[in-house]
Amino acid sequence: MENKKIIVVGGGAAGFFCAIQIAELHPDWDISILEKSNKLLSKVRVSGGGRCNVTHACPDVELLLKKYPRGARFLKKAFYEFATKNTIQWFANNGVQLHTEKDGRMFPTTNNSATIIDCFLQKVHQYKIKILTDHEVVNVEKIKKENQNDFLITLSNNKTMQADAICLATGGMLKSDKLAWLITLGHSIVAPVPSLFTFNVVEKNITTLMGVAVDHASIQWKGNKTIEKGPLLITHWGISGPAAIKLSAWCARELANDNYEGAIVINWTPEYNEATLKMEWINLRMDFGKREMGSKNPFNLPQRLWQFLLQEAGIVLTTKWADLKSPQQQLLIQSLTRTTLTIKGKTTFKEEFVTCGGVELSEIEASTMESKLVPGLYFAGEMMDVDGITGGFNFQHAWTSGWTAAQAMGGMG
Image (cartoon, rainbow, N blue to C red):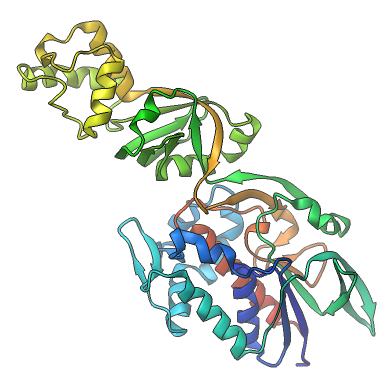
């Protein structure tokens, strides 16, 4: 097979992984990574608080697919070829051991993202892959040359490059105007909007509890059926924590359409709803009748939150359980099972900035990541209309799509 000239656009996780996988198949090919900025692997560097959440311990593909609000059906074929177990094995083969935390997130045992970056840079050096920073692509054209299809790439400095095939791995597409040439080539862009963020709360009384974490609660965007359960954190601006961030992913489009204004409903005791807690209350009054409500909290809630909910219901902390008046009891039950908070705006969750939206999936061949419209043009990572919840799932998509594109590009005749 003759040597090919391959260009990968984007110096992030998917781009690097794709380039390395092609080089593993064809060490003699001319492979370049073009990055428009002077920073490489920037999301890898900051992910997981600088530890790099490489993937999630989820070997069951069907279970893994449930972690993607958009793109699950599209990813199915690729995940059966390359998913979590393959990721773990590839890194192990290249000297990087991963460990699993109790919530399933997987990190290098060094707990340092530099381990992943060093691994990639070592592979790039080994295979003599060219890394060209400050190379912004402003146009891509398909050209005919000596009876074969080639690409002509124009850079922002008006220089040009040619390639036999291109993999686009430019990350989230919030600035999709930079890729107008993709539309010229016939592709459609699903309007990108943010995913993975926290909620800014209007009612400032609850933010006096900043720092309070509840291990198990449920949260819902009012008017939407999606309910997420898990840890919640009260912050100085509103509500954060894994359950809130997952909700933002599942409801990303609805929230964007609502301009991030509306309400969330929190159940601090998700094993109950209002009706079942009302029935259970009879037993609680009998069990704790002589105890003061402020000191006896039967729901394992943080004490500051419990006392806040009592005060919100107009209950004096020294009130005995047996003496609780019916109107206050009803208010407290409502607060426990459906605290409703007004939301106005969002805050990006740390560095976990992800977009939903991107290149329309119906225009991409799922088994190869190749454009159905432009032969020789491939995609990898977040620029496609695929996104996962927080926990290593977006990186897993980067590895899988990068690997899948590389196998197809490496098989070119």
